[in-house]
Length: 193
Image 1 (cartoon, one colour):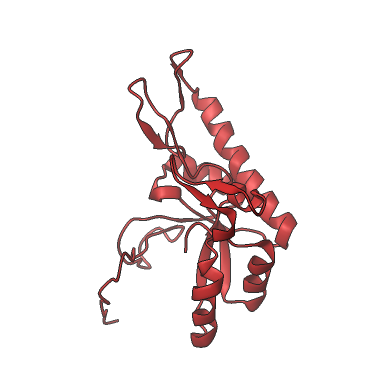
Image 2 (image 1 turned 90 degrees about the horizontal axis):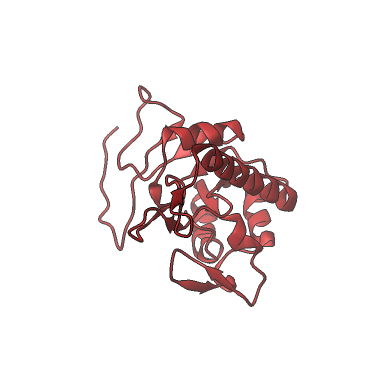
């Protein structure tokens, strides 16, 4: 469950408890640090109230249940950034930022430092607030690169959860995990094992 919405606690968590079913919840640090009563800048345009997102106490309750594992969804890379002189916004996790004023792209060294610092900051924030050591990252918008995976692993995020559709098999890379993406009233698919 991405983004750390309040409904994860109010709607999903009771079902996990009822059926004793585990889940992974991906948290965006900057959104969690937004003070109650203020708005969270979400995506490139939308603004959502902070009350739409989990509180630290709710995260701790779910963690103590043993049913929920938390993952990084980055500290502040869940957004689009200016990616070229034409004004296109691209996923921050895979894009060298374009600076309109200087008409230059961010250097690869700066890009690597931006991602590494972001991953480290989110890990530290969640550890400080909850005692949880994160082991995985869920890529914002499903966008990632091998370089981003490498930088995440250097920060202790060993597992990478993508939006690549499909089932995982034991013969595949078990550190990069695909998932079935549920959208608006999906039709259940029964799979024979």
